[in-house]
Image (tube, rainbow over all chains, first blue to last red; front, side):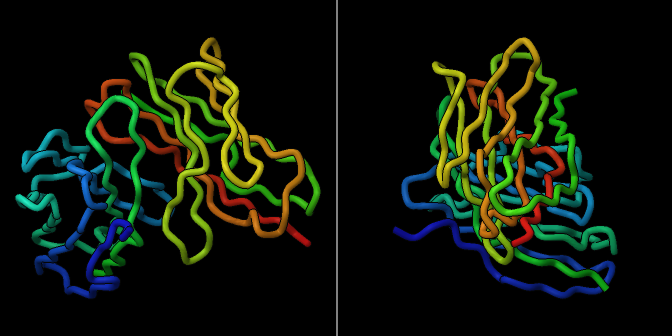
Length: 113
Length: 114
């Protein structure tokens, strides 16, 4: 069974551009989470989607946005990129429910120059 | 505000030493607790989890953790570490009922010296 897959693996953008990151969850999982892993800051919760809707978002500015498609895959968009957005972006998926664990992808390394 | 604290950011041990990594959380409600591990160049993997029941949970690779509700703690332990345990370890918490994403601690970088 395929795990959570993310693309691209690496992405280099210049300041002010937009970045689009993609995530395919494990088959059967309806929830998708996005996290930012910046150097020295640990993993910070960005967004949670389930059944196509945004369920919750972390403490990030509105230029971080995303969506979930009918097949439960998801996109994370980062507009007006800043140097501080350079980080590893992790996607996780889970079943929706009280006692479920999240499974993580390999991540997309975004570098803003 | 919800938060997770990991006390040690860097830990260096020799092989066969015992390990205990601290994790404390601040959450308003009943929680689920997790430890994840990130080996060099690999994705985050679940080590163990606590939802309810026996507060001493056993995970993969000989790891265990104990949930102490009165101390808001979920410390990770292993009696004898191996060189292959070198990795980044993250404690994570979410609310029972799943109305939010996982909140992670900042991680502990564990280095095992042969």
